Structures are given as C-alpha cells and as structure tokens.
Image (cartoon, rainbow, N blue to C red):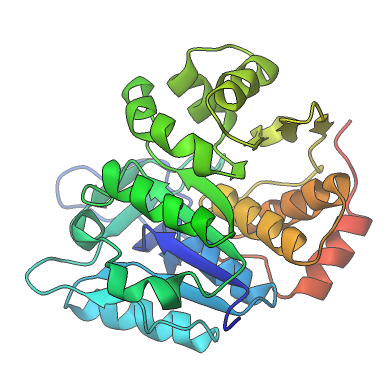
Length: 314
C-alpha cells in the first residue's frame, strides 16, 4: 500500500499564545511569552504526529483558498505528508482557531468553522484514500457536510476493504450520539476523551461508558482520562487501566490528537495492548509539555525512549 495511515477529517490552523491570564481592557496591550502557529484539528494534529512518528501519512480534508491554507499545506508537506487528497475550496476560509493558553494549561478558544464544514470524500478518491491499512476519521461533530450518512458510507467502504478504522470526535454533547451511533459498527477503535464519552452516553464511569458503545457495535473503546491516564475496553472482555505519566503540563492543545497518533503508530508496529497505551500516552504527554498540537514529539525512537523513562504518576 502507498500509505501507513490515511487521516480524514478536521484540519485547522491554530494560533496559540501563552500564558494568558486576562484579555486587556479596551485597546490595551499585555505581553506574553510565546505565540505559535500549528496545523491542528482532530485530523490535522493527528496526521502531523503520525508523520513525526515515522508513518507514511495521507492527509484527507479541506482548506480554503487563502493564506492560511498556504501555510497549512506547506507545513504538512515539510513533514513529508502527502497532501494530494486535500481539497482547496473557493469562497470559504480555512478553519482556524485562536487559543489563549492559561498558566494551568487550559485553552479557551475562538473558532472559525470554515472549509471543514464543506468537506466530503467523493467516491473518485476512494482508491487513494483507502490505500492504507489504517483509516482514521477525526473531527466528527465539526464536519457539517461529512457528519451523518456521508460518514456511514465512508466507514462502510473502509470496512468493505478490510481496513482498520480508528475514530475520534470533537465538541461532543449529548446530541452528538445521534451522529456517532450509526458509525459504531464500523469502528475498530473508538477513541474519545472520557468527558466526551460521558456526555454522549449519559454514563458515569469508564466501564459503563465502554459497555454503552460496545453494545452499539464498536469493537474497542480507548478513552483518554486526562491526568488519570487511559482506559481500554475490548468486545472480547479485555479491560485495562493505564496510569498517567508524571509531567508538568504546559498546554493541553492537541493531546487527544497526539494520543490518537501514538495509538495508530502502535497498531502499525503491532505493539501489545499495554505497550500501545503507554506509547500513546507518551505521545500525548510530550505534546502537553510544549505549546501547540505538534509540540514535544520529535521521532518514533525518542517517543519510545520517553515511554520507557518517564515516571508514572502515583
């Protein structure tokens, strides 16, 4: 196959500043330490990190016809990502977010929905898009055109071609389950945060959340638990809780996307489940130690060493 992973969905330009303790009054100016631009989104952040982790990665999404699009595409290409399946849409802006990063790592955001709302995957692209053993759909909830029946068609095709499907979403609420539920029978690894899993299912514990999604057709649930680690539940009855690493958090932007990238990379390398969780957590932890969704991760080898050497939170 041409690629190790095909990453479909939400592509965003993030503009991040830290540390932000307040917004200045009137037209006044406050001074901060750092401002960065990054390729982000539940697909964009993931594809950057899979590329950094050594995977041949295809980006499948949409940008506008503006200067933000130029930067997003250039940056992905710089990391060796194939952008030939990215759509440039006229008349709409590239999806973008301004994030004000608080000293504790929280990240209140201002978002322009833009091109990602107008994105779909035409059948004419299927042979390229599915030319990878792992297909990741990221960003359900902010993909207005692709969300719903179009995503069902897409994931059905992925499974018809015997691909492994990984999945993450964004901005989930109680109503998002209506979009997600029809997709679950075609998802091998369902990977939301525990907050998203709870909001959609109405359940209170990771185990109950997992049962909710497994009962509706998902093969496996992998929940990120923030400072509490990660939780894995498979339809075969396997249940694992993996504790978090003891790190100093700078910015949580893109940590879920990095976890996804780490887990996808672990699948590529056929790691056992416990090691896969540790590697995914190390990937997310590295991103949390810097500013932006691509911070911290340098290479597969360095992430592997981090996984082995970082201390577990007690």
